[in-house]
Every structure is written in C-alpha cells, then in structure tokens.
Amino acid sequence: MTKPLDDQEQFGLRLGLVARLWRAEIDRRLATFGLTESRWLTLLHLSRLPQAATQRELAEAVGVRGPTLVRTLDRLEAEGLIERRTETADRRTKSVHLRAEAAPVLERIEATAAAVRAEILSDITSDEVATCLKVLEQIAGKLGGTPRAMRPADEDR
Image (cartoon, rainbow, N blue to C red; front, side, top):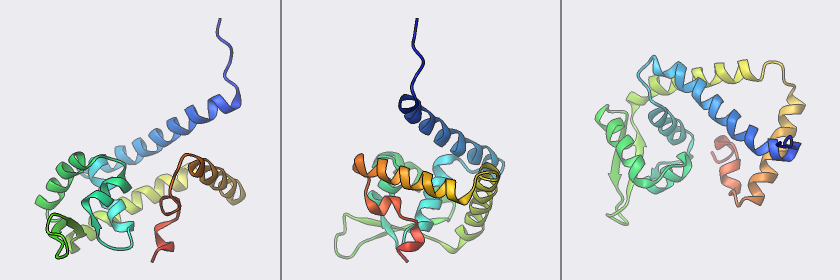
C-alpha cells in the first residue's frame, strides 16, 4: 500500500508536468506553421537576449547541449532566419544573429505564446502570479539558478 504524496512531494512533480504541458500546447499550435519546439524555442530565446549570443550562450539559454543546438541552427540558417558570424576576437567562437526574415516568424511565435498564456492565466489573479514568481525565484536560487536566467529579458535592455 502506498501513502499519498504530501504537498512538497507533489510540488516538484506538478511543476515539471505544468511546464511540459504548457510547452506542448504552444508546440501543438505552432506545428501548423511547420515550427518544431526546438526551432521556435531557439528563435524565441535568441530574440529575447539583449544582444547576439554565442552558440554556447544560446544553448545554455535554451537548455540544450551545444551539439543539439548546432543541428537546429543549421536548419534555421538554411531557412534564412538566422546567421552565424565568426567573432573577430576569437575565430573559434561564432555568434548567432537573427535576420530580418525572422520577424514574421517571431511575431507568430509571440502571438501564439501570448494566446496560450492568456488562456492559462485567465482566472488567476495578478497577486497569485506574483506570489508564484517569488516562490519560483527562491527555488531557482537554491538550485543555483542564475539571477539573469530568472529576470525578464527586457530588464537587460
């Protein structure tokens, strides 16, 4: 006989589940436009960084390993949405830049994400969201999450 999980035990399980479900809903809606999760997440993260990122920085922001990101970047570059440039200070390092052609794709991603967010949070108060954000920030801090990772991108601009 198993004992029921207490609230703290359930918290981590539900947190992971909610994150997966949220991303899956955005992914489902963007799939109709031919966007895979890896592609839309990479474009979204790149658009929210305060400046062009190295491939390593972008992989860290997206939460994948470098070799995994390279395949996604190859595809995005072939589609004309990004370009990689060799850094003059270190020719081994490449920075990733959005191209103007990415703007309509990013608008679609942002609009879809905003629609999902509005639906999900429609009956949750601003105070409840603020409390949740505070708790998540505390947890991230205990797990070694960097302050930069927890700040909205527009605070860096």
